[in-house]
Length: 300
Image (cartoon, rainbow, N blue to C red; front, top):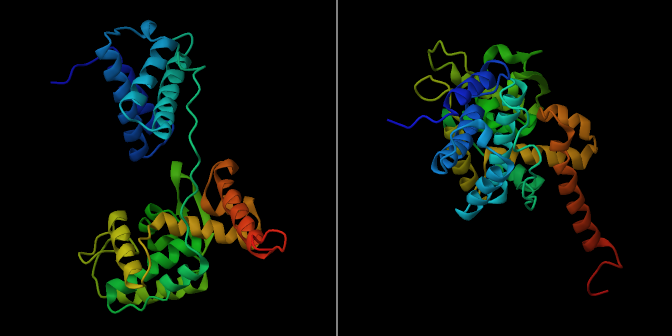
């Protein structure tokens, strides 16, 4: 039987708060649990038995321990964020006067830009010729993800009633139970209609648009696997659904420069999250400059 620490009851109430009040997804709550379990185990191993004993020095020692056992800066940042959220909750509920993590700053890590496909690679991928019903479905969901910049979980979660004005718009339930309306491109509409015609072969009460051979909602893992297979068939390197979403954002920014609209389409709560694509666009400008400007050419 697992040892219960002095934090156990506080943690359970905190996780209930995240689920019911913050309305966070189960996956997000599970991530918080995983991070805070590490902290709880660290405190148990160091014989900390009361909230008052959790000091800033203890917090720093925990982060140092995470680094020593091989955690990367980004992982440590996430763990620190989880701890800050939990202890702020304790302060707001008058269980502590001040959070021991309040003044601790996270380690810096190099910002990695997401991988994207070029427009030519996207055209190559979507030039896929389906040979059976499931490949018709695969092309439809992949066209939709790229057309509307969806997360893979959002695409698999689409139901019949989510479409508006025929197949022109789609109402998406995103992170934090926030909804947004996204347009659907003409090629995606054609691909979806082709799949809807094929889907009639299944008799199922499931309202999901994208189903498997058993008539059940398609899983995100299945989409990842089918996309990799599709990319391989088209002579492309491994492609993930999130690469399609990143590619959508990058290509939209290159064409329009309208960061606010892209933020809305992606469902980002903060513009700072969307701004990573401006860095990607800037890198592309640098490449074009280096290639084209007479004073930039190495052999000039």
